[in-house]
Length: 175
Image (cartoon, rainbow, N blue to C red; front, side, top):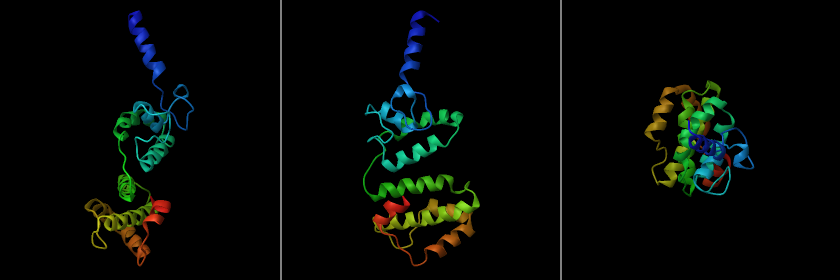
């Protein structure tokens, strides 16, 4: 390696923060997933940058902080994919919440599947309301996930019988 190559290599290592758990005051101290997204997006250093929806940012921080160093390194390739994923309104919250729940539903411990099933059905209710679909409309993805765990699906349907959540309550408690 030439001196110029070493200088370029040093510049890269010194300039790009290393992913680690928690919040960091500056890139020199490391970066969480979302701090790195703010860095790559050219935004001010933040773990809640404007380039990504707040709910997705929250989810990314949780995953970053609760995964191993080895797995966190694998997450780095996903950072560019959250830059620009933003929107407003309850529909965005519901879509992010549904995607997150569906991604872990099948592998979640049985005691968590009931709560996830309730969350999925609640999210589907919100999406049906927003999209002005008939009451009880459920996406194919959610229907398929619930079919895999019929006991949790039945429990969730029974739990939700007669209940309807308002968008304000959904944003505050569910999403």
